[in-house]
Image (cartoon, rainbow, N blue to C red; front, side):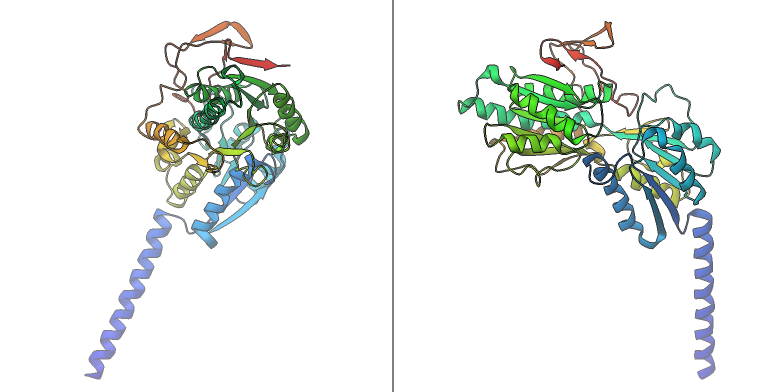
Length: 397
C-alpha cells in the first residue's frame, strides 16, 4: 500500500510540473510576463492637465504591480521631446505615452519599430499616414464641456430668478490658451450647454497664448470677472482662474467650472464642477494589448479611426468630477445626468446644433450654419470645430 501512495504522489508531482511548464510556455507564446512603460509629460503633476494624465500611470501600476516597470519624464517642452524619447527607448521601454503635442514623436517612431508610441492627439489624423507603431487618442471633450455648460446654466438661471443678475447679465467667461480648434470646440460646446438652459447667455474669451502660466491665466480670469462674467471656465493648465474666482467671490457673485482636475480644494467657495478626460481606459487598454501580444486598436474600447481612437461618456472616457451640492442650483444633477445618458446612448447631434452661424477666425470665407448639425470627432479624435459663433461669443483683446 505504501508503494501505491508513493507512486500516486510522484505521479501528481509530475503532472503538476507538466502543467506549470505548459502554462509558462502558453504564457510566453500568448502574452508577456512583464513590460517596461515610459511616460513623457509636458508639465509636472502640479498642473491639472498633467496630474489628470498621470492618474492613468497610477492605474497601470495598481493593476499590474511588479509586472510593470514605469519610467517617466516631466516638464518636457514639445521642441525638446527628442532627447527624453530616445533615453526611454534606449532604456528598453516597450511602450511610451505622451501628453505633449510634438510632431517629433511620429517622426522618430520608425527608428524604434519594436516600441509602441501612443500620443494624445494634436491634429486631424483622418488623412494622415502614420508609422505602424504610432497611435493617437483623446477623449471626446466637447461632451464634458457641454454638460459643464448645463451646470453653469442652471446656476445662472438661479441667479436670475433670485434677482442677483438680469437676463442681459448672463455672461460667462473663458480663459483659453490658443485659438486652436481643440480650444474653440471646447468653449463653444460649453456655451451651447449654458444656452440650452439660459438662451440669452453670451461668452467672453481671453487668450493667454500659452498652455501653462499661472500669472497670465489668473490675470485673464480677473479681467473677465471685471468685465461682468459671472461664471469662469478655462482650457489652460494651471489653477490660476480658479484662484481668481475664489478671491473675487468676497466682493461679488462669481463661480468656477473646472477642467481636468477638481478645483474644490483651491476654490471651495466657487467651484461648481469639473469635467475631465479619463485617460485610463485607453492607457490601460494599450498596456493590456501589449501584455497579450495584440494590436492596441483590437483591445481598446472606443471609436476607432485607423490608428487613432476617441470616445466619450459611452466608453467611460469622459467624467464629471466633484459636483458641489452646496453651491449648484436645484435640479442640476438631474439635468446633467439626463444629458450624460443621451451621450451614452450615442446621441451627439444636439450639441453643435441650432440657429447659429460661425466663422473661421483665420479664414472669413470659411463659415458654418448649425441649422445642420455638426458632429464632432466623427473621423478623428482631435476636435475640429473651429468657428466663432456670431453675436454670442466675443474674443477680447
